Length: 246
Ligand code: SAM
Image (cartoon, rainbow, N blue to C red; front, side, top):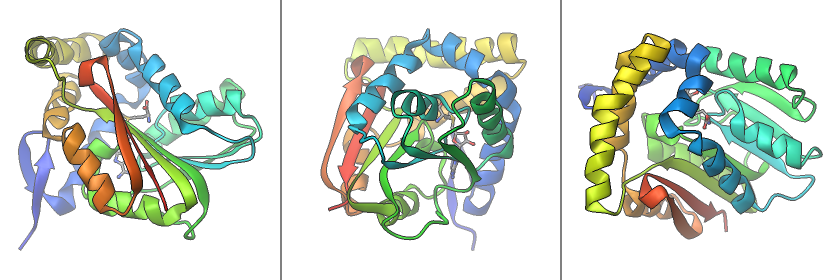
């Protein structure tokens, strides 16, 4: 029998989820950056800067940026640490291609390479990377545990995982306002700016279906990472989880 999972609020066969997620990102790829700025009032830029600060990168590090999309995180790393080796990677050709074109256009491609892959099945030898980042990607995985254990496998000893993802606001009043914004404004913005309300309805739903801060921390610990912790940003709208390969 087919195992079930969620695609937003819909229950779907596990084997179909990546196809549905793929359709969302193929549809949003062209307008992804504009929508990101509009939806988060530009705050996603700050959240990504904080992630790079927390990463504690060394100049010659090997870095895997999973679900790199249009390349915001890789760009920040490349600019600040030009001698690192960055593997930009995404399951979706259109998103990866936007990232690759941007890296060439904005000249941050000199220390980047581009790999189309699933974060759930990493085609790298064990102990390859010093740092692995996943920015707003894990939420979309079909099997998050499988992805996390692949990330652990590919990290070097003492290597560091950083997961930036939507999470759960702490303040209940703020949480209500945020829910209202997510379900009433986001899909309308999607419709107006990108002619696509459905993808932004999926965004709002997928955020609610994603494990909260504590649960995700448990998942990271259960995948074998050590010294796990998280930082809440914007009252927990977003969190950065960190774990180390011991
Ligand atoms: N990291 C970028 C950022 O923060 O702006 C892009 C984030 S975008 C919201 C999510 C990305 O995750 C999409 O580009 C999507 O194709 C990718 N993605 C979804 N499932 C994936 C998987 N299983 N493996 C790798 N990438 C995946």
